[in-house]
Amino acid sequence: MSETAIEGLLGGRVDVDPETVERGLVKLVLSLIETLRQVVERLAIRRVEGGTLTEEDIERLGLTLLRLERRMGELRRIFGLERRRI
Image 1 (cartoon, one colour):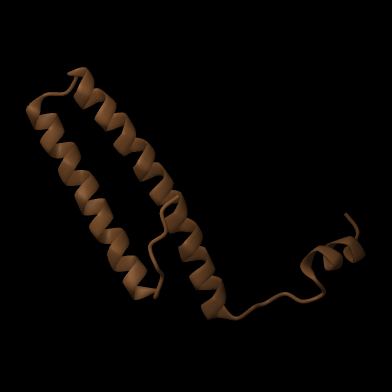
Image 2 (tube, rainbow, N blue to C red):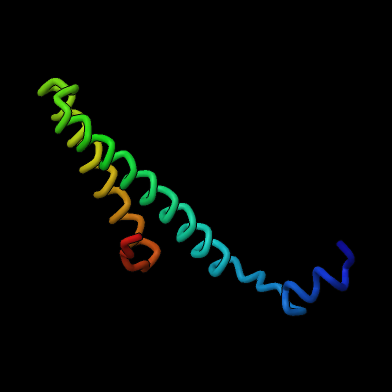
């Protein structure tokens, strides 16, 4: 790809503000983690409904998902982000 084509894609200007870059990266990471969390949660529900988990497994899985949600909430607060459901 030529330099002119790249400049056209970037609109001629690249925002190099460290705060903007950091916030954008955090948004991306949290979006990916939230998507994975939802997939894991759905799979866990299927396994619970299918009877393939022990009570201990269910408890451990619930606690893990709860801790992940709390930590994600902390990160959203730290970076001033709102929660968005995908």
